[in-house]
Amino acid sequence: MWFFIGQFLSDIMQSINSYIHRAQAKKSTTAYRSTWQRLHIDFFLFTSVLAVITMGLFILYSAANQNMHIVEKQLLRFLIAFFIMLIAAQIPPQRFRQWTPVIYFLGLMLLAAVLAIGVVSQGAERWLDLGVVKFQPSEIMKIAVPMALAWYFKDRQLPPSFKDVVIAGLIIIVPALLVAKQPDLGTALMISISGACVLLLTGLNWRWIGGSLLALVASTPVLWHFMHNYQRQRVLTFINPARDPLGTGYHIIQSKVAIGSGGVLGKGWLNGTQSHLNFLPAHATDFIFAVCGEELGLIGSTVLIVLYLFILYRCIYISLKAQDTYTRLLAGGLALTFFVSFYINIGMVTGIFPVVGIPLPLISYGGTSIMTLLTAFGILMSIHTHRKLNTK
Image 1 (cartoon, one colour):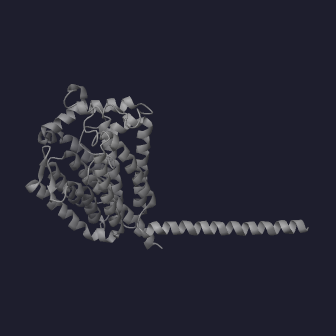
Image 2 (cartoon, rainbow, N blue to C red):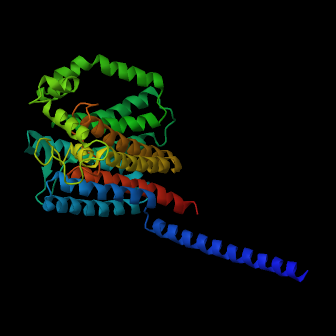
Image 3 (tube, one colour):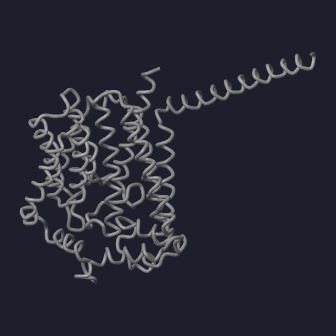
């Protein structure tokens, strides 16, 4: 009998110890989470973005022919962008809602300034030179347009009426036309897509969506008339790259060769030939995914795409947990815009889409697009972490 009593007491002590350990572990986890919350950083989004950036710097080092100066310059841009992201994460979503009209109209004024006093580079007038820094105001509209649409629909009945859809269309079209005038078809397309993503999230009637697509197809001859010659050549090259293999079709042909030659395992980091021997144009910017495919193969490219999809999943999760119409539409719009940007770039490099000059997010060499994207992630973190704090 004493044996069973002793065994019973032993079991009780083990249960108590197990409960204490679980409570301590839960307390530690709560403290850990509250630390990230106090910093207004979403741990999962932050770490996944950091993983893509780290992978991107290695790819860029190889794509830039081991030019450390380019990597250091890109790293400095990331550090500045991270600082901006952390600042954006500290600002409550209510402030963003209040500032939205100012941000949108300031963006329009900057676009108008580009057409008046912009800096011409590579045949396009896309930059404003402030002496200390040179930047593309068009990148700001990738965030400003979704913010403006979310602000417009925040107190309106959804699904939207025809009148609201027309006004929303004007909010999208005006900056898109100003950017297309520069000319910058790729960014104008992304601005239009960012606005369209928010419109879709409002519960837009599918008949209107189908009608819009039919109207777009019917207006193709008109669009063709207003396109620049190089833009027409890109469309023709997409249909048949072999029509001009040493001219307009050269980019996509060399890109396919680079990706195909990588196979499953790739040629190895720093061992790519298409980029290092300068067969692949724009290998550090728009076509950097081809460098990834050649050197890291199918496996490395899949890892990158999975990281992108995880970031997308987290962004969508944040939008689903948002507390009001403004934050829900804004978070969802930014998430879908991020998806479209890497989807179009990869499709462009692999020949699925025409070449439109959209960089690969967090990988391609560049400055303003990095700042814009990390600012968007900061806004998403603000939406999520402030929601958690407010519900305690």
